[in-house]
Length: 178
Picture 1 (cartoon, rainbow, N blue to C red):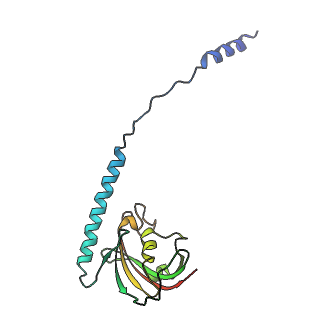
Picture 2: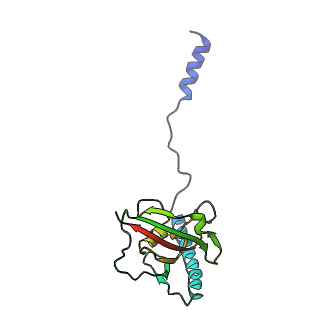
């Protein structure tokens, strides 16, 4: 047999070895989750203090704490009981603006334009989606959303930064029932 070929076969036979189990590089203890929870609690409490200061600075407005974790006050309340709040799949035509807690405008109604939204069937940030469910046609409400009810950790990838609580003034023009 050819010596180079024999050498190659021997080399191949001895270079192969059975796989060995590797030890884990790191062990996860869940401490990072606990730290994240603590950071989020601290962030929420800081935001809540700022929001409470904003509410306290407007004693003429009666703010209501929603069960969803945001605050709101009526600017124009419709007392007509024949008008209903929107249900699933109803088409809502509305305008809104977005500002920071300090009052600086992020988006005006002109920037955002009038919007048609199919209730709970389209993408909309959580706070606004829940806020629209409280409204009747022709009502205007001012909402204060903590960051987790607004754009959260990521922001909107444009003008709203991460972990930014926002204020939205929303007017529902019409509700078309399905």
